[in-house]
Image 1: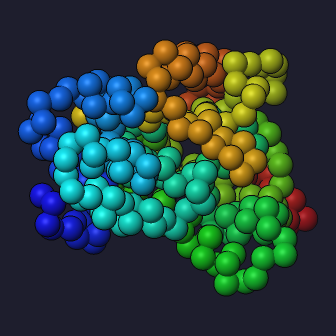
Image 2 (image 1 turned 30 degrees about the horizontal axis):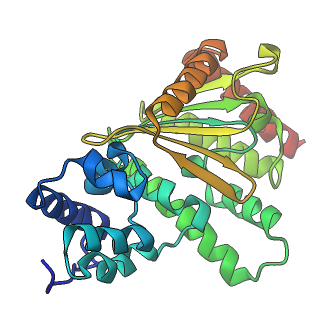
Length: 278
């Protein structure tokens, strides 16, 4: 293992994770035993091995020492450090690509994976009003690339709860909003995604603190991701993930049914279309 580097063009996280599993088992250690000197859980090691979490350089150094792998993991961490996403979101975006199911609550804006080009552009311009055009174009392109996950007809299963404020806040213009909502309605009608709207009439609810994303995987423990302004945290503690799962379940219980949600989304889109023509 020590003499050969990984090919970064072929899913470096998955390859590095597979090599970690081989090295750990060769050393006769369980996931929990390897995690103990790193001060992480066994489930965290499992996520590294499954490729759902990125291995950071500080962990790579310690793993090389513990497993006596002659710097293999440090050398190959470079491929993992490169990401087209902001640092606070990079790990979550990489985990999305491996997820079997994604459940997301969006309180203020449409989820990135569901945004149209025009909507995404307006969002990035609002975040960075002085950015050069090349940067805005790059950010929009990267966001649209995430949406390609939905090109698979079944995986990942995407279930979103949208606060009604997401529908009512005009991002860009009424034309931009109409196009964005029609795009979501089309995905719903083709049965590619599930969407529920949490109406204003629901009042106080379980996730008034902000956004929430839950991800499950084929062969790794689930993850929760919470995000604020230019900050995000990926969580793997089972009790914490379970608490956020309950939060999401309560959101769906208080939201409109998928059928009523679709009707509302299309009604609001129609209103925007009518307003722009008027």
